[in-house]
Image 1 (tube, one colour):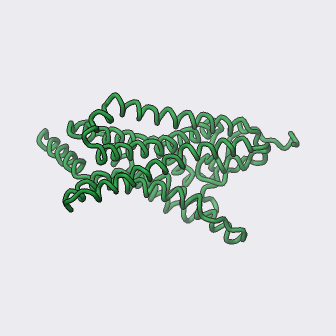
Image 2: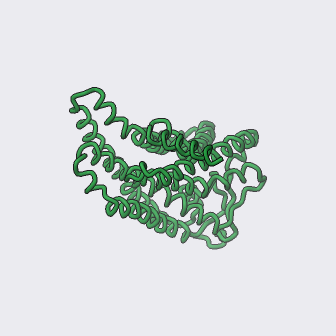
Image 3: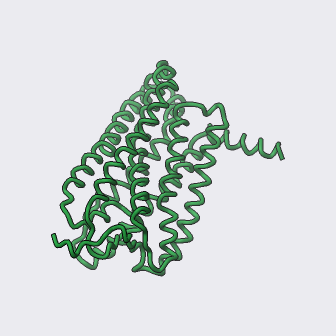
Length: 319
């Protein structure tokens, strides 16, 4: 490797974002800003409601509260940077800010995967073993579960981020993305990244493949149990308790599979269009999914809707 061609990452990185499509930047600035405000409002209200309403003091809503807080942290780690890039001609980010942003996005993503699998386990116990539910999902059990999910996500992020930032970087340090997405950053490295690739494959198996398998098996048992319920009304009530979680899982993992599972084009002209599509899909994953979570749980959950109505009614009475 020619050390003279190496560029110090301490000088920072340049984020391309939608620089090649300036007309889209103003439109997406407005859209992303509105979505971000909905994320803050929706998830904030969901956290407040699940804290204030004693009827929602259950393991499922404790996990949901963690999920809402996680979505706020995840979007806050990237959306302000994206909004700034839409308005700034030279879209630069310092090395330290890039490290922090990459660390937070990795930690939140991995933690969400584990949290969704824990929520599936909660629904499995509630439907398949309802008599044992108070014992299996006691506070002494579900609080350490949530703490473990955050610990696992943060540990994974420390490993992946430290491995990436130890690499030497070459050229003009241009990242072809909105944020410091690790795959885009690794493309700038002028060293062997095989260790990074291996560690990411292992992490994907632990935080993507295993949770998906766990959720799938849980819902196989859940659906089998629901189908054995004799009354149609009983089946409907049982399925309604897990329909919101199942919808969130489909949206979350469906976006990931679509984002990384589609074939890459080798045609240069089509590759540019696909590059734009990849960025927009990544934007959808990072903004639209956290925005949908509180909406899904509010629209498909009678308890949450009742708690929101009570909170609004109490506010009117105090006024």
